[in-house]
Image (cartoon, rainbow over all chains, first blue to last red; front, top):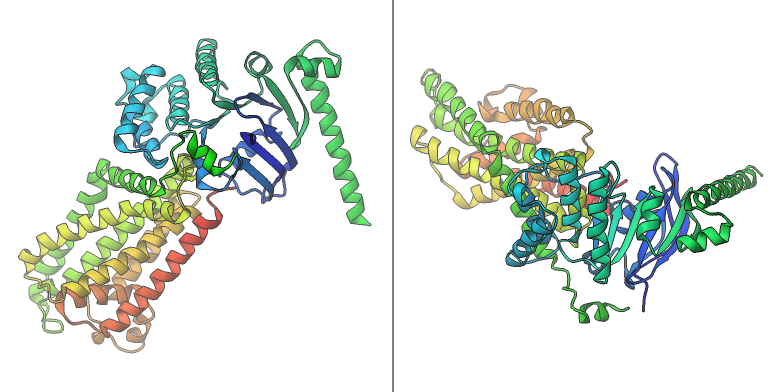
Length: 258
Length: 267
């Protein structure tokens, strides 16, 4: 069976010269709960933006359930909740969900029915006819998640879904996400909350300077690095990855100078 | 896993046409939600032009090309209102979607790039048509302006909407602030329309102004619409249609290039 997500040599260099992804290889198995952990600027958001057709990769291959990442079939299979709430200011909660279903090819009846379900699941009934700018931060987060799940994607990508939310909402979102995973959905979660990655993810990849520097279960990573906590793993692996990257960059520059 | 496997386990195939229809509906929904700004205001301001310039001052101006002055200015004013409406609509909707990043919901969706481009443009078409139809319905009985060539008028309106719609999309993609959008509207489209013969016939201009006016692309838009309404124009209708079609084709190609490659839309 093909991986839910397979990236081969994925590279992204922004117009200002920043190398955000450096020939990154990654395979996310079908049905897994996969965490992507790394410091700010490591390339997490760039990676998922590349998968979701939101940036222009410089090089590399993307396959979603064996389908080319650029195909419409692949895009139909992905749901994304981005880090920053990016909701349509002209639409109410209900309309946001129904229109999203429409963009993903759902019929009006199916999209409406599913939107009503999501409104109940994410406890947004009281705000059903309220426009996005009038929602609180927590309600926007819930709506983002509801929107990502509306078209029943098989691969759900969550970019720091609990960043800046209170503890209560964080645990509520964790419950939703766990329930989703139990029903067979593959989840790719990016976070820089270590306890979140440890609590939710079956497998974790650590990303630093646009490369995967370590990958295993939380316990496997601790064993591999001979440490007791994921925080120590994180510090060790990310520091190692950064140093390795700097060495490669220096060697490349030296070769270019010759 | 092959594509067949994906479909076999019950995942619905992408329906890009449905996505396009929903995007088009969203754009019309936006126009209707802001109807006082998007449709009512332009209709009232154009009607004021007709009343003030046409009916109040028209009596003091002799006929132009055989038409009363208030009749002569109606086609140009309708063209100006429609062009500004579709440009403003498309540029602002794209700019807001980029600025708030809710354009990502469309870019990530299973739609072809040309369907996204077209879908974003439908709201402007809807808005321009509402304004054009309302102004025609109000101005024709008020001034007695005829409708001599409906087919030519439809063609001229289609070309106007294609050109200015695509221009709005392009500017909306490049704009960094709302000022950039207003700049093009207030300092390019509006002056060129005024200087394109909305209020006068270029035949009355002396050299070199007559020749300079022929270098103004908006002149051909006004003349094509005037030909549709009045059955006469300062240049051959075919030349007017040809010029607008060429400009529209270039602007459509530009906007589609931006959607196809993702330049300026995606980092």
